[in-house]
Length: 323
Image 1 (spheres, rainbow, N blue to C red):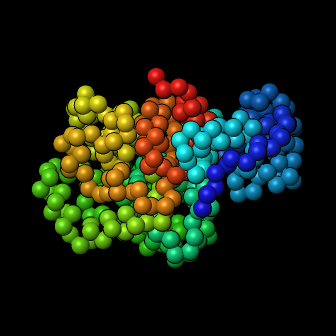
Image 2 (spheres, rainbow, N blue to C red):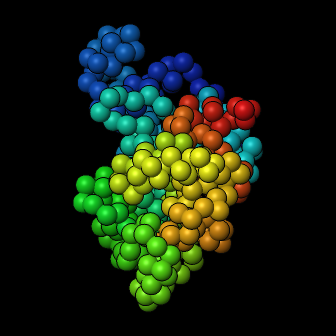
């Protein structure tokens, strides 16, 4: 299942680059042809003609598939730098009502779909990027799938609507879904131990550890998702940052090496942790944004990921010399 893009970089013209950018703006970001004409500095008539040409040449199908020279370069360098099996870099360009997480999630859906196979077990974390992946994935990608949550559940309906991925993915793929019956962060170790002792929790965690594919996300320096989901209070956030946390991975607060901190909050997490995923053969990390560069780099260097899906600006940050 090695999809590494270490092939020679095909020759791409400036016209190809323009065509791909116009297709991205129109089909992914949803800009009108007039808005695209203003952004690309061409006439609306030319935008229409470029889109027609993109369809005629097969660049636009159900996804945008064009070998941007710069992004292919970044993909090859990411594979080499971090020992990945594959890397996929999408455009960073966005609009106010479509976040970078949503863009990465849409592109990651095609990557994940290409790695599914009939009868596979898919373990998933949660977050906006994975939620968007789940919403966008091709429902005919594979059959007889099982989907299992890797970490505990979200507490509120609004958080589930925005961040929860397992149930959305299972419904989209017609798969059976297995949940961890408890919150991501318990209020005591005793509560965590009681939940972990339940047969349903033990079954879900064993399924997650032995999954065929893992869909992963990561919280960066601001840990915005777990704070927005009211899992982490402002005071608790301040305390973990003071303890050296640079991000959150599989519910655990990680330090600069990518390893979970020895912090009491990490002892109260429900679900499998970073130490439990090494035997999953395909581990896809979907993440991007300047605030996540340090955390993503640390996890990549620790060998926890086989495939990375990110955007071009984040890729540039990952490839730059570490400060």
